[in-house]
Image (cartoon, rainbow, N blue to C red; front, side, top):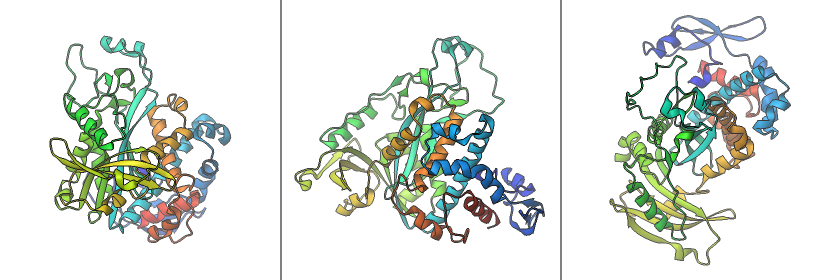
Length: 449
């Protein structure tokens, strides 16, 4: 995993594994250095290396994490950290890798014992700096476009019960430092999946009849030249110095394949998706075998906040929509003091839906994506994001995902109480998600296995 690169020992086996020539390294305790750092030895190639030193890393990174857990927003962290710019971003990048590594270990441990899981997947658009100017573009046709930022299309997948954010991806494909030569003028672009649309598709306005909203969404999708050609931004915001902006359909397929790799093969999964045909297609492609075995079920969901109804039963409704006569169900939903109208479309389940299905698919909030991005916008405002590169944005987003999931500031699901059980095989120490020393010990324990 890339998140462990900065903290894991290295050996010839690891290099061979990248080239698919050998098994991953298998480390065992060896001895300690003069300052007490634990050394390990690979049982296969006999390389001796040092584990990450928890105290040394904590000296550098703990002050940053303390500020973040105390509620310091992202755009104020640099001033409070009192570091020069280069050192600040080096440490921030290391912190993001550490947080991602610990999150992955927790998720692997927790999911390995999970028998059933309900997830929500939804899209969102964020703008960052493109790094381009019209004058710097050698393509005369493209140089007439003023690049004023990059609009990235994100997909998030969260736990429907707790709001825990498992996966956040986007549609920018980073380019290598040595990019290919530009194509000669007049030569058509390769069919590389690049986003080329120059329009923004109008959203469907919510209706008091949530099933009418679903019907209008089907009509919008059918009116496209192709189902998967979502126009979400103009070319003014579709170019980046850091890589190629792909069509959202490519990002959706990558997201679902990534999600499949993270989920245990034996877990029964329900995926509640934004009403978008290519997100559904990506899920069916990734989980084809599980869908056939009824181990994975897929649903569309529309929701919007509303006042509490006089009679909740009156809002119940059922209708078949689209060419495929998919069954849609309308419900009223309440969680804590908030109320929503829900439209649930059944995509893979052939049996008649039960009354309990709504409670299983939407046990708490139907809009965890909105909850996540709302708090991220407050933590790192739009005007600050537009001045940073895509790479910096992803670092900040990785840090925030950890804070959102573990700090207790945003979610109230007892996640910290569950960590010791999930990590019992990784580390026996007391759990402290705000401690760098604890995190490095978790990673070291994971490396040794």
